[in-house]
Length: 474
Image (cartoon, rainbow, N blue to C red; front, top):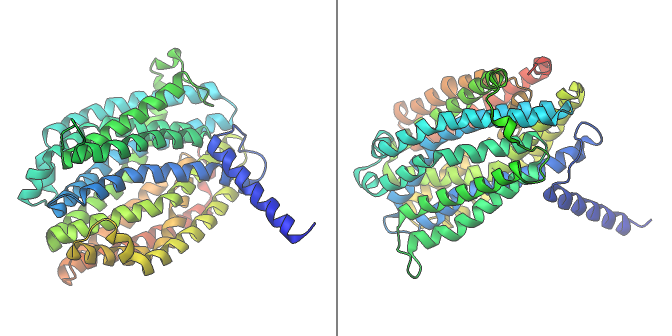
């Protein structure tokens, strides 16, 4: 067989795998090639994460072209910073759902997996209704607390009110996708966000600028489009959970509260939620520190850079989610060594990808940022932030995989302590010291980010090698 034929066959094989991964073919991830398992899970999970980030990027693009764009961008960025608390709750509960659903699937118990998924929905609805109400009432106070200027508060309060009020939709979108991922049905999670994004991309310019009889809502229209798009995505998810042909299928009998399962989920979700709240509060502090030391231009630049960073970091996050599913299912199948090898393989692939992205940011930062805003002061801050933060990208990629490996095993306390140390002992004090004491301003905040993430990654790897996560029972 010639080299050209071998090459053609390999390309054909890869494209076939991609097609099957996106289509969402059911398979057992506890047997067969680990590389293939990582690939089949990671492809739709990466696309899912990209779709989630597109929400913020679409808003940022259209909002960045409005008049008084620096105030509009600051509103979007500061609101998203506060919404990270909602994301933390959603991710914490979805993490518990992923771990338990994956463990039951690994045990070949789909009925138990479905029951665990419904119980996680009951928990999330109870928590989010309170938060949505709080956000609706205190939207202006939230922006004021974040250090927004008076003009930003006046312009952005309706946007913040809608985004905070629709947090229940954010919670459900994250949680149900966590259930799909735990079941190994990553394709369905991807498709639900694809549906939501298509709606958002159509509605965003329509509601911001107005078309025909539809009035222009400006910045508020961006929030309306995002809330509606996510709501449609949730409806798509629920249909497939109750009526579709998903691996995991909800039934009416599962709607009854199962208190032992609820207690177990809360036991996993509580430290998991705290884990992400630790990180979220750190990001909120950094956003506030940038806003107070550099004013609206620095804040807008930082928020623009962070959105770009998050967009490009999401493929690594998708790979880390694949690692969590593989850990949970293989531990359920009593194969801890296969679970460990899955994590190491995934970390390797993630590091390679993030290294390439790091080079892209170091040499192409100005070109990337100029796509979102033309204000020179905003661009200058954003380029500095992007280049400095990207120096730790390889560590981000490895660290996320290690952290999610613990979470996939149900060991949510270990990464919680790691996050507490990395963010609150290293990142926050260092950022404050550099920004205030050494008078570096926003630049000091940018420097603190890769330093803390590197410490987190090294600590995670050391604890992962000890292997206590293999012994966790859920």
